[in-house]
Image 1: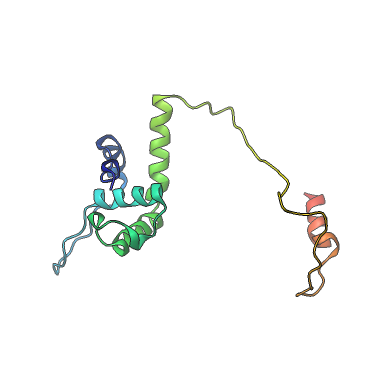
Image 2: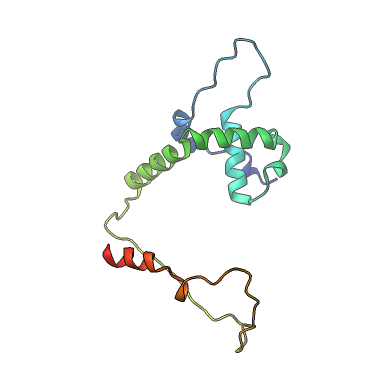
Length: 143
């Protein structure tokens, strides 16, 4: 595996570590917890490569452990807080033009679409005319 995927940079970890919830107490003992930094590196690795949780390299620990911690962090809002913190950091470092935004879209013809439409058998009862319900159109016009 590529060395740059093995760990997260120290500067990034220093920014996000305070946002991660602390390990809960284990009064009855139990298995040692996989470090948050290793789990965070596994999540970043999965986001960069697109692999399945179970296909994570062994150096990150169990894929199910990584997924469980990822789910916990999503539920507690860790990634929203990370996004805000890193966006704030980038704004201070490089500057974000908050008053300007862009949206992009592209529409192209299907290369093998052909000229004739194929007939398809109806599988559901006929809906409203032109695919919209009269109540939806009325609500839209009144808004």
